[in-house]
Length: 36
Image (cartoon, rainbow, N blue to C red):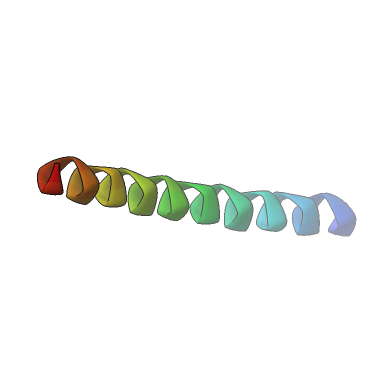
């Protein structure tokens, strides 16, 4: 059960990282489109 909790925690961290990177990517694309 301890291993399951560790995997769930790691999964949550990974999901947060992906969400942050997705936001960064969207903001950068918005900036690029505004310059064009």
